[in-house]
Image (cartoon, rainbow, N blue to C red; front, side, top):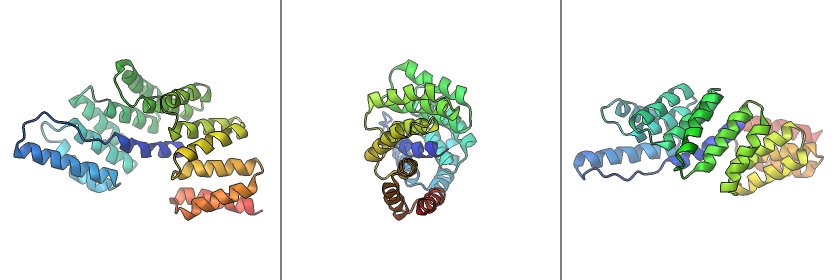
Length: 251
């Protein structure tokens, strides 16, 4: 699931202030301030605090769709995809045109292993022909097939995402994963290198690149890459994998 965790970073790009046509009243100003605080909590990764703040507001009559969406993102942040899916579905019940919530729901369905349901959700966004972040839709469609180990169907969706945004690191990363799965290591090296170039602070593609370099016999470059990852203080899982590769390279 590492590629999914790499992608989730980009979901924060969906958190944007919404223009409102509501009258400027103390109540409307309080609602706007509450939403802004919730956005900040989610953006800063303070998911438990965000849930405590948003949950009672999501149950109030007339709750905005964005309240449910932010709550869903918070549940994703604490690895509770079932609760996240319910929140995104609630956002769509409030506003069926909210394709941010629909994209998040499609992603969450992938996390839960509901791949066909995810594709149905995501294809509805495509059919509407109005979403400004279509590269994310194609990325998630590709992920749904990658999770099913069907790279033949996944790669064209990743390429469609790159056709829209050639600097989008996540599709390169996932194409690289597909290429590794079939032993195309030289091509995977290029894909991971592009992912690193376009997202230099993303450690997952750096580790995949280091692993491919090691398998191609480029041990010196692989060692440098691993040392760079460890200096960046990765999370526990990534650190464990990096240390394992470092021990392998020392032999």
